[in-house]
Amino acid sequence: MKTPEASFFEWQRQFGSEIDCLNHLKHIRWPTGFICPRCSCEHSYQLTTRDVYECSQCHKQTSVTADTVFHGSRIPLAKWFWAIYFLGSDKGSISALRLSKLIEVNWRTARLILSKLRTAMGHRDSLYRLSGLIEIDDAFVGGKRKGKR
Image (cartoon, rainbow, N blue to C red):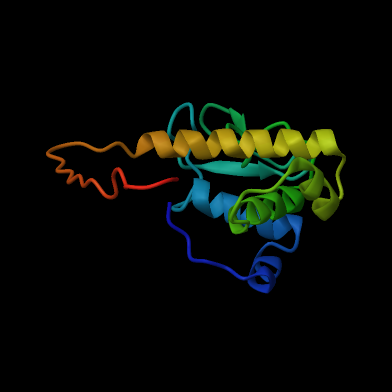
């Protein structure tokens, strides 16, 4: 998924609260509305006490974060989204220690977040494989030079 580049302030404005992050995930996961993962029914109701959707046909309860990197995490979504921003905006990646200071979590939590995000990024790259006829051109630049090194 290609997303437009966002500045620090745009990201903060767009994903400043938990509700903003949940709404964004909901829009990405179900762009045309809820679809049950078990029976593909489009009718559901929301259980506000647990923040889950229940299918009106098979009664399977599904949260917006189910089967994502955020699944089962007690870390607020806003901190996850900030970690995504810092990981994606830093040219040479970001260390767990630096991330822990930026999003105010301990080092182990920051390391776990980075590990999950990097794994997800690796899986995303495996979806885009080259296929068909591929032409590659090669060139040899340089070579042995006379004289001392």
